[in-house]
Structure formats: structure tokens, C-alpha cells
Image 1 (cartoon, helix red, strand yellow):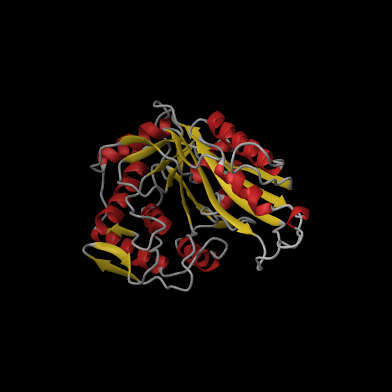
Image 2: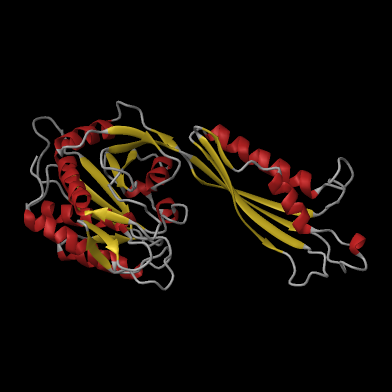
Amino acid sequence: MERAKPEERERLNALFAELCAIPSPSGQEAACSARVRAELEGLGLAVEEDAAGNLLARVRASGDGGEGGAVRTVLLCAHLDTVPHGDTPIEPVLVDDGWENAHDAILGADNKAAVAVMLVAARRAVERGGADIGLELLFTTGEETALLGAKEFDASKLTADFGYVFDHATPIGEIVVASPTYFKLVAEFHGQAAHAGIRPEDGRNAITAAARAIANITSGRIDDETTTNVAGIEGGRSHTNIVPDNARFWAEARSLDPRKAEAEIQKMVGAIHEAANHTGGGAAGDGIGCDVDVDVDVEKLFVGFRTPPDAPELVAAERALRAAGYEPSHITTGGGSDANALQVSGFPCICLANGTERNHEPTERVSVAALEGMLDVTFALMEEAAT
């Protein structure tokens, strides 16, 4: 394979730093999107934008697929948004041969390292009059908010045979072959306010009900495939002399086995209703009644996938990684990516690790070697996926 040239590596690093410095928390991707669009249109590519703000561009293949063959098209995908970083700016700086933020906040390598790689790869394909394969370049919005953009994207627009999402903050070479099904739950408790010192028996304490429910929910790792988490609680009154009549909490369950994820959510719902209906009595310390109303909302935010070992997209990725000097390894993950949303739509797609580190943390970084290494992997994919 032909590795990245010095000028391509220089362009990659400069573009990456420029993109990271453009704030783009979920829902506020417009400025970053405009920069990406300008880069694509500067290459002469037409850019489609949908109602969710997703960008799609195509580089047509220059080859004919050989005797009796058809030219293959491959999708490359990355997301434009980042997690929030408040008012803290992002100023990319090089420290010990790696990119970091000079300030105490995220860098944005998740996922702008991949965005920059895709743009430089597109430039090579265009400047050489096309590629041996067709490329479709998808830049999504709202990935950090439960894959919002990718779920809104109309995958029927894609002509690619399969695709790659560059979005896993682990060493290059890791291929995500299984990702979980993910449920979110919100429980809202509605009690009855009363004077806490004069008529407490007339009140129905929503916080007590919520606390009882949470105490009966397992939060953490359930098994090798399954996790749950109670993530937050709010409600109550600002004064201690009022029995609180409102409380809510939110939680999640996810598993590589969708049946297990659903089973954990059902356990949560059961614990919530049992706590809301509790009327007191029983064992010591269990005498305070709740008897409140409760609304429970459960949403399946994304669906998991498993990739068979002989899938063409997996085989091509393994070849490309080896060609670029990386030994491929198969991993499972407890997180999701745009690959989950694309898989649900029937489009075959896998997620590749892109060598970034400590995503979503103030110490987030990516080494120059990993950034440039992922560009070599992408060039290799453009060759290996064509065969």
C-alpha cells in the first residue's frame, strides 16, 4: 500500500487542530459543519445535507472493477459533535508528540480525528482522478446524544456495499464486532404535599418512593455482557417543612444480549412500581409508606449488533490493518456508535478504533503517530476493500 506522504501528514495535523478549535457540542455543530462542507466543496464534491444536519458526499470510482466485475463503493463515517465543554475553549497543542487541549477540557479528538482523516483521504482520491473504489463520506450530528443524527439519516441514500465508522477510543487495530442494545428509563413520582410538622400523615413523599426504588435496583456490572446505571435524581421542595410531592430519576440498561437488557429494564420497572405502591409496615425500618403515583418512560436508544467473522467488511478491515502495519483484533464494547444506527437500517457497517485516548475527559489526547496511522489505515482500506 502507498502510505501518506509528508504533505498529507502535514495537512492532516493542521486540519485536525483547526477542527478541534471549532466548538461543536451536540446540537451546535453548524460552524464545524460549515468548515467540513467548505473543504469538500473545495475539492469539487457535491454535499447533501439532511434535516438533521448530516452531510453526505461522494467520490466516484475511477476504475471499472476489472473483467466481469463491478466497482465497489465503501462508506466512511464520523460524527461532527462533541460532548459539552462549557465555556472552556479548546486550544490544541502538541505535548510529547501528541495533541492535547491547552485548557482543562476535552480536546475533541472524539471524533474530529476521524473527520480530518476522512477529508484528507477524500483529497487524495479526488486529486488522483478518483479511486479504485467509490467513496461515500458521511458526517453525522448528535452522535453523543444517543446517535441522534445517524438515527435520522436515510440510509437508503447510500449506494455503498458496506461501511466503516471510525469512532472507538482504543488502539488502532481493534475492530468492534459486537455492540450493545441500550435502554434509557425515566421514572417520575407524584405524591402529595403536606405540612411536614403538623400533618405529615396527609402527605405522600415522592422522594421516599424514589429512594426505595433506587435502593432495590442493581446498578453496575451485571455480567460480562450487561451493565446498568442509575445516573441521576432530582425533585423535592426547597423547605424542610413540606412533604415533597415530586421526584424523578433516570437510569439505563445495556447488554450485548438484547434479551438481558430488556430483562434488566423490566426489573427496574418492577422495583419502581413496588416502591410507589408501598403502604408501610413489614420489617424494621420498612414502616414508612409511599403510595404515590408514578410515570415510567422507557426508550430503546439504539440496538446492538454482532458481525460474523466472514463478513466482507470485516475481512477487508483485517487486510487493511495488516497492510498498514497493525495486527487486527476483535473486541466487544459496552458503548454505541453510529454503526449501531446504520446496522438497524439494514446497512452493514462496523466500528474501527482510531487510536484516540481518554475521550470525554479533560485529559483527552491523540498521538501524532495514531492520527497519521489512521490515515494510512484509511488509504489501505481504499485499496483492500476494492478486492
